[in-house]
Structure formats: structure tokens, C-alpha cells
Amino acid sequence: MSKKIIVGITGSIAAFKSVQLISDLIKKDYIVDVMMSESATRFITPVCIQSLTKRKVYVDTFDDENPAIITHIDIVKDADLFIIVPASAHTIAKVTYGMADNMLTSAFLAATCPKLIAPAMNVHMYENVATQENIKILKQRGILFVEPISGLLACGDIGKGKLADEDDILEMIQYALTPKSLHGKKVLISAGPTQESIDPVRFITNHSSGKMGYAIAKAAFCLGAEVTLVSGPTTLRKPYGLNVINVLTANDMYEAMISHSSSNDIIIMSAAVGDYSSTHIEDEKIKKNDDHLQLTLQKNKDILYELGQNKKENQIICGFAMETSDLIKHAKEKLLKKNCNMIVANHLKTEGAGFQGDTNVVSILTKDDIQEFGLLSKEELAYKIINLLINLEA
Ligand code: CTP
Image (cartoon, rainbow, N blue to C red; front, top):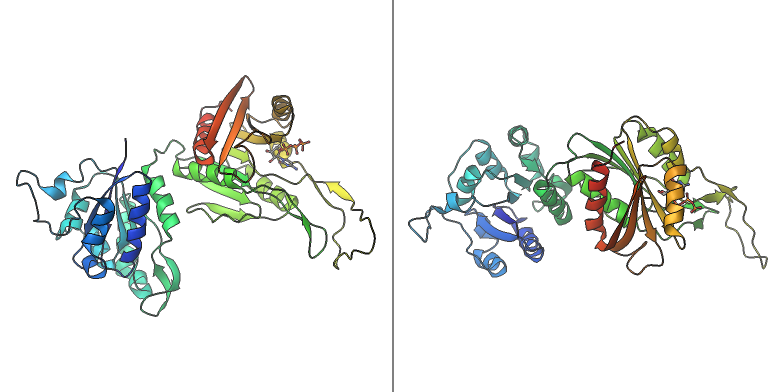
């Protein structure tokens, strides 16, 4: 069944950005009911929103169509989430002190579902002790926030106060709607390719996009874990709420993973770590003088193997295997040799599986079991992987 999100829009120039957000929420199959403060209607009109939601947009508390129903109480009863995007300093202050002077603030006070606020205002208004104290109080009450970002503000000032990027807001909506089965757990994940220079211009790498690892990291975050993502070079945006460590070489990744490993409950090596690097990086660009060029490569450290050898009590370790033949045989060997609890094996030659796409087809191996997963989006598969890991005995 579709989830219902109440979107409150308040008086900020960023109100226009809520239009795109609402449109995208509808495309994602959410039921969206919108409430606007009086000042929000100065920036965008209810008609604009109504054309997207195909539902009544609420502004006036006393605009009840049916006298038997008190709208601001009734509308939030079956809501799964209440978000205020953008939230002005004024509305943040009002909801902190339980003021219910318009439709939006009355409904917010009456709502018992999770709540998420995305502030947008002038930098000095945002940094003002009054606003910061209000935000602190609301956070202590369990209300979630998506931090504004720094940049050139509508007023001409430069600083923190711009509405968060829509992708960050969507990720926090997902977070707010997901049950916290990983609450209190720490998860360390590697993702993406590694890159080994051979001269100042060229490097050796592979086709990994990092999409699978990033999807797992985001799923673990939404399920309530504290997530550290060690990422090789990718074009993917930094997910909201994660501690991201960017690395380049296999050795950098080794250092980052090993130094964080002991404090984490679950470790997932989804990165496509380069097995070899050049013994020598030329200082100058290699010129194409000869018909043949010979490079001497040396083996990189096997990070997963090292993690497996130093596995802590109750720690769960998951590796990946990417093969072009004998997938299960090689994956089983890796499971044992690298002392993992689980291996996610994907067959490079299967349609819909592999590096760059948004889908994957995998077999998941544990010591006593093999489960096959047909074509799934990397997002769906990420949740399946995490749920299997949660239920494993260390
Ligand atoms: N891996 C690693 N360090 C390496 C190479 C691989 O930690 N230097 C990890 C990968 O992140 C993955 C698992 O080991 O989780 C298996 O990687 P894969 O490339 O399939 O296997 P290899 O161990 O490199 O063996 P081979 O290339 O011979 O198949």
C-alpha cells in the first residue's frame, strides 16, 4: 500500500523547490497531501501544487468542507510522515513551542507520525541562537532534520541556509520511513573501483561504478546503522548522513578499511579492488617510442583476506565475487579462504548483472546455504543483502 506523506510548505524563496519534490514523491507512488502557510502562498500558489497532487491543498484551518470532520486532526491520522520543506525560522519557532495558529502548525502538532524538517533561510537567521536552540529542542524530541547547505542565498549573503538538495531530502524521507533494524550497529562498506597510476597521465582501473556498494551503504543507513563508506573514485553523489572516506589506490583502501575495521559490527567489501599495481610510477609521461610497452605489476594486498584473518568476535564479514565462469565454485573458495560469513556472487556474463547497470543478478553464499536472486534493482538487492547479514550468526 502506498505511504502517505504530508508536505508542509512555509514562506521561503525555496518554496518553489518543493514543487519538484512533490512531483517526484508522486512519481514514487506516495500519497501526498500538502499544507501551505499563508506566506508560502506568496511564493507559489496552491493551484500549482493541486495540479500535481490532484488533491485539495490546505491553507486555512477553518476551511473544513465537511462539518463532521476537523481536517487538521483527521488528515494526519493515517500519515506515515510529516515533512516541512522548506521550513522558515518562524515556523520552526512555532512548532518548537507547540503553537497551532494555522493549518500547517495545527496539523504538525496533532501528527503522531515521524516528522522531518528541511530549513531554508538567511544564514544569520539560521545561525541565530534562537533558531539553533529551537532546532536542538526539536532534535531532542526525535524530529529529523536535513541540514541546509552553504552557498549564495537569495538575499545576496553567502553562507549556510540554502534548502538541502532534493536527493538529500529524498534520502532522509526514505530514512524516516524505514524501520531501524540496525539501530546501534556500525557498518563499514567499501565501494567502487581502485585506481593505480602508471605515469602522471594514465592509470589502471576497472569498470566498477560503485552503485551496488553505495546502495548497500544507503540501505544500512536507512535501517539505522552508523555507516562508514570507503569509496574508490566514482561519479556518484555523496549519500546523506554517511561518513565517506574517499580513496584512490588499493593500498589507500587497505589502510582505510583496516584502520576502521575493529570498531565495526558488519564489514562489507563490495569494492572492485585492483589486484595489481605498477612497481614504479613514472615521473614523466611515458612516450610512445617503441612498438611494445612492458609494465611490471606487483600484487596488491588482499583487503578482504586481511579482514577475515583479523575478524573480531561477533563481527560479520561479507565479500563479493565477480566471475566469468564457475561462479559458485570460485565463490565457495573465496568464502572459506577469506574467512567470510557471506559472499555475494555475481556472474559478469548474465544479462542485467554486473558493473555499470542499475540491476543485478546474484547468488548469495553462506557456509551452509546458497540463495539465488533473480533480476533486482541494486536498491532492492541492497536491502536483501543487509537483511541476510542481520540474521547471520557471527
Ligand atoms: N578483494 C580485496 N582485496 C583485493 C582483491 C579483492 O579485498 N586485493 C575483495 C573484493 O572486494 C571482493 C572479494 O575480495 O569482496 C573477491 O574479489 P574478486 O576480485 O572476485 O576475487 P580475488 O580475490 O581478487 O580473486 P581473483 O581475482 O583471482 O578471482
